[in-house]
Each structure stands twice: as structure tokens, then as C-alpha cells.
Length: 220
Image (cartoon, rainbow, N blue to C red; front, side, top):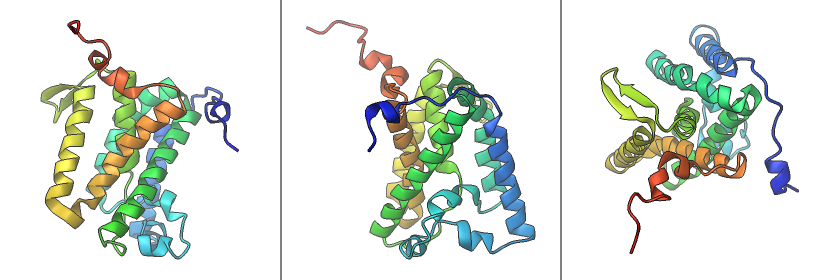
């Protein structure tokens, strides 16, 4: 039985570059799939109809399958830029647990979302759910960080998270079935916030938007 103390029991702090190991594993799986073992896609992509038949490992393995080189590149670029910072804050073991837990839960959520939207045969692939979780973690640890979108537009990290959330919601409602995967990205944000609250004992909303808890002007 899980208790609050067991859920929050910290892992020993370690530093072994889990972010770069994850990038390496993702790249290895991609090249194996495209040049040696194309059947990996069928085995590892998360397909709700197959999960319903017992292929539950796909809740995890879909994180390591990508639909093309650009899909892989942009996910790994996000992991490369934001992952090491979050990893230094958490420690490598905790970071790996965070990555796998949030990504897996985003996959479980997507399983139900795909079923509701009648997309049980549509495969879900990619690490985007976990990458969005890392983005929220980065913003929570460093809310004053400024990120240059496309290298040009400066945006503070919390507002980038909020902006992405709004865009994902809009994309979902404007594209129906094609937008189901946008819910996976939002699920990454949501499960990252829950991980911070239940596992790390931190309120990410308070860290992202402290003015909501400490108003600039006193109330009447």
C-alpha cells in the first residue's frame, strides 16, 4: 500500500547524464526501426486496440518510437536543451523516473482519449508527452528564465507553458481526430504538475505564477 511517505521517498542524488542516454536510446531505436527492424513500429507504437488485447508495454515503448526524422529531431532538441537543467535539479535517477512516469501516464490518458474519439486503430508515437512535462518542470524550477522562440521572440518560461497549453487546446478542438494527440501534450503538462505536487511536494502553479498567491495590490 502506498503512503505519502513512500511516494515522497527521495532517490539518492546522482549525476550520470540521463538526458543524453535517453537521446541515444531514442536515436538508436529510430535507426534500428528504419534500417533493420521495421516491425519495431508495430510492436512499440501505442495502438489502443492492441493495448486492449494485452499489449500494455506500449504505454511505455511508444515514447521511443518516432514517425520521421523531423519528429525525432525536434523532440530530442527539446530534451537536449531543457532536460539537463531539470536533471541537475532533480538528480539523474529522479529525472529518469519523472520522464518515464509522466510519459507513460500521458500514454494511458491518450489510450482513453483515443477510445472516446473513435481512434482505437490510430497509433500514438513519440516522446512529446514527456518533453512537455520537462518543459513545465524547467519553468517551475526557473520561472524567470527567458526562452527565445525560433531564436527571436523572448518569452518567459511560465508564459511559454501557458501559451503552448492554449495552442494545444485550440489545435485539438479545431482538428478533431487529428487533434487527439494534442491532448497527449496537455497530459504531459498535467501529469508533470501532479508529479511535482505528489512526489516532490511542490506546487508548480505557485512557482510559475507567484502573483496569483501574492497579489501586487491588497484586496478590499
